[in-house]
Image (tube, rainbow, N blue to C red; front, side, top):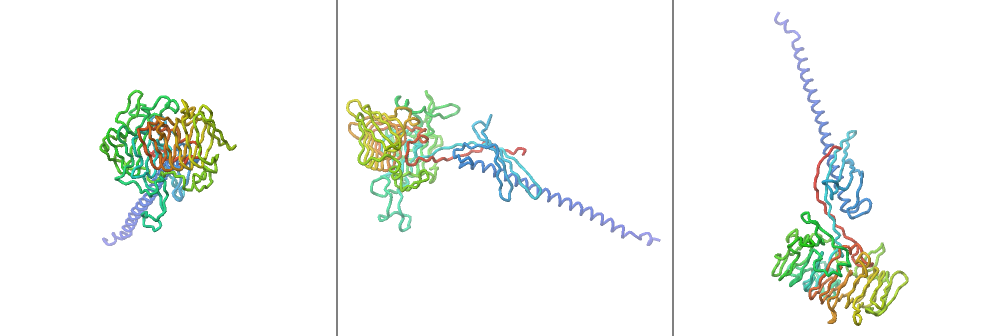
Length: 522
C-alpha cells in the first residue's frame, strides 16, 4: 500500500522543477531583454547628448571662424541649422542674441538625435556663451614694431596711447646648411636696413624702453582740443558698472623685455575722474618680463604682469618685399602692387605748403595742392625716389588734406610741417604714407611741435625728434623717438585704411566663455 501511494511523485516533482526553471528562465529572459533595451536606450541617450554637444561646438566654431554666410566677425545668427554626423546621428542648432538676463550674450540651442535601427532618441542643450572678438591687425595699434634693431624695438622717450604690439622676432633668412642658425654666408632679408642680420630680441634685450615722462596709456588724456575735434569720439568701456572713455589698450611683446624706469608707466592706477577715463591697461602680454629700475612697480594692468605673449605666430610684420596676393592677383611684392596700381612719379616729390602742384593719371589716382596748402589726394601715388612734405614761407605751415589716398616712396618720407585732415579722420578723410626705407618726422632744426594724422608705414625705421602730436598708427621695424612725442591710436582706422597699405587685411581672434549650460526638454 505504501509503495502504491508514491506512484507518479517523480512526474509531479519533475513538472514542478520544470515550472520553476521555466519561471526562472522567463524572469532571466525578461531581465536580459530589459537590460538590453535599457542598454540601447542608455547608449542612445549618451550618443544623443554627445551629438547635441557636437552641435554646440560646431556653432561656436562658426562664431570663431568663417560662418556659413561667409562672415568672420561672430555676427552670424541662425534660427535653425541641421548637419549630419556620419554614423552618429544629426544635430539641429540655433544661434540667437540673448535677452533678459542673457542680454549681451549668445544663446545656442542644440538638439542631438541618435538612431539605432528603428530606435530614435533626442536630447537638447541650452548653452549661453559670451563672445569677445578683437582685430589684431597691425593697424589696430598706436605702434606696431617688427624685428627691432640694436637689441631694441623702441629707442627713446615717447607717450603712446592705445595698443602697442612688438614682435622682435628677428629678420628672416635662408638656412642654407639646415643647422637652425644664421651664418655670415647665408642670405637674409634686411627689414630694418641696418646692413646686418638681426636675431630675435632676447630676454636681456629691451623690446620697449620708456623712461622719464614716457608712458603707455588707455585714454586720450592730454590730447589737444583741435586734434580731438578731428577724430571720432573716444570709445568707452564699462568698469564696475561705470561707463568710461577707454581705448581697450593692450601691450603685447613677443620677444624681449619691457624696461620701465623713473616716472614712466604702463597704464595708470586710477580709473574715473571727470570725464571718467579708464586708466589701467586692459591687458599686458609680455613673454620675457620687465626690467628697468621700476620693473613691474609702474605697470598697471587688469590682468597683472605675469601673462606671456598670447598670439603665437598668428601675426607677422607686413614687409614690402615678400610676395603678396591682393584682389586674387599675385604680385612679387607690395611695392610692385603699388607701382602697378597707382600714379607713378619718377624722381623725388617735393610738396611745399603754399606752392601749387597737381598731377593725375586719369584712372582715379591723383594729387593736388593749392596756394593755401589744401591737399586733395585719391588712390595711390607711387614715387620712384623720396617724398618731402615741407613747410611754406610765413604762416603757411599746414597741409590740410581731403580724400582717401596713399603716398608711397621707394626711398624715404620726410615730414617737416603739420599734416591734418580737412574733416573727420579717418572716416571721411584719410592719408597713408609708405616709406620703403625710413620715415622722418620733424627732424630739422626748424621743425617744432608738429601735428599729424595718418597711417604711417616705414619698412626700416620711423624717426621722430620733436614734441609731435600724432593721431593714427605707426608700423615699422624699428622706432627712434626723442623729446616725448605724443601718439594716439584711432580705433576706427583699421576699418577705414587708405588704399595700398601693407597688412591691411583684418586678423580676427574670437574668444568664447561659457556662461551657463543646462539640458532642456527636446
